[in-house]
Image (cartoon, rainbow, N blue to C red; front, side):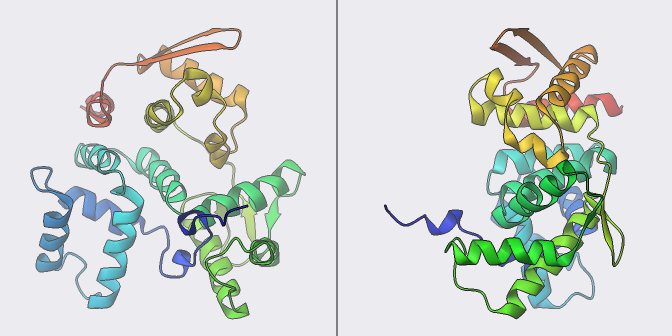
Length: 264
């Protein structure tokens, strides 16, 4: 059996990252869609958007931002459109969370393999030791980029839980509880659009495991898609295992403009 590609292994990126919600919002609002990613980031450096932050911290923020939201420039540009249209945090924060999880397998799977099973088992809390245990399992299975030292395990676990708290998945400063997540229909429709391009079918969208980041079952996803149809954000048709989804745009940017029009 061949070795797992390094890009799909668990990393320590969470040590330098957090939710970065205010920084992300500021970057999106300052973005110039007429410039490419490199030009925008260079301009942000020149304009000192982050004030008193050290140069090394600014570079960390920009690297994290680029990885999360501009690894696929279509996603990043669509988020710029929403942010500059005045989309509320109720729309933006779930999208920041979702795309952060898509671009950091460690963050994603802490939710899917630690938080979600505890919630499903009826527990309301998540302790640092639960996350550390999961990290140790990944290390034992050689799923991490290197064999992490104990201090690294602790820092990844702590930062991961703090990030999930800031994104609204957990709550509490010291003792963390699992929050009751609410995914508004507008960001849900945006995610469905993104998934439709990735999955290639309505069935794939409906049954995508990525919805579990919001603790949504298949029935919950279907209710959300029906609600989106009622609000004229998409069309949803279901006939047995045949699911058809259609959107009123042919690009991520176009669909972001459809959503942004609801803000005017």
